[in-house]
Length: 420
View (tube, rainbow, N blue to C red):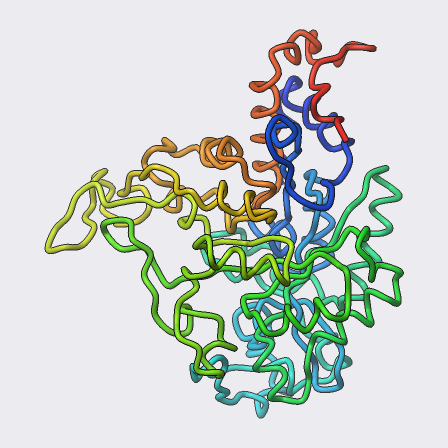
């Protein structure tokens, strides 16, 4: 594998400096101080763009690439252990469908109101899941590592973060997501107390621990708020973006599933209004919005009311859209005292709006300039490189500190990064 993060001495030196700075403080800052905060790079499912997601190898690579936090999605096994999988259904992320000994485990379950067929973690013991191997779930990405890596427990992810923190000389945090909390509660495998038990076992169940717990539901975050001081983040989803840039809502991505069960009206979009943000602040420390909530896009060309191929490549995707002006969500969230960590940033050309000219670094720069406090990246190396370039741009003295790619001793450039 060619590692782009090792190319370019100037960027490499800046990355090294950025990686050595402290992990972000409790909450967002305002005014001049807000511009001194280093945005976090969160390794989304590890380094999912490079290796099969939610494996120790993927998490370790994310750390090597400079990620500040690694993100394990958590589901429960039949015997109550927490393992790192993107969904309870493991059919797309493991080799389970190819193993004849588990053929009889294939079934249909209803997850958040939607029936889906596959192999579900809650039908397997931890010992059985340890016999599975991870695969790359995105077909256009490198499939060469399929079947090589096992499925880790939450304990093992924390142990990796602690070990790598010591090796790297910097704090590596964990950013677990409780996947489908209501679904797990209905199975008698509620996630919340299990997550806290694991954190307590490792001494990380406290406010200053390098931990964020995230969820697309609200009730379980409110439950957690009563039982822990660990930082909590409300995720904000949606179904799609319309041709005119308006965010659309369709089940199960229209609202937190606990709202659907409780009969509460509304959509995820209500959570990013000023009133919604004020409500979120009563139980959480930040929001994790889908990035179009911050900067949306509209079709360049419309045919029959739908996006058409504007760039002539024979495909219709994000490259056929152009950006709209940023919304006020970041500003309003900061006014409410909330951090903002949008998701998910990826490198593939089809995922980049035309304004970014096919370069994912440009997308990161746009969001860093917007003032986000961190972001989720499938390719942490690109996120870290873009952050270094953003930092150099913001401090005119920084470039003077780099001579032939070497940081000059005693130089004061990038001094704002070290502000507490």
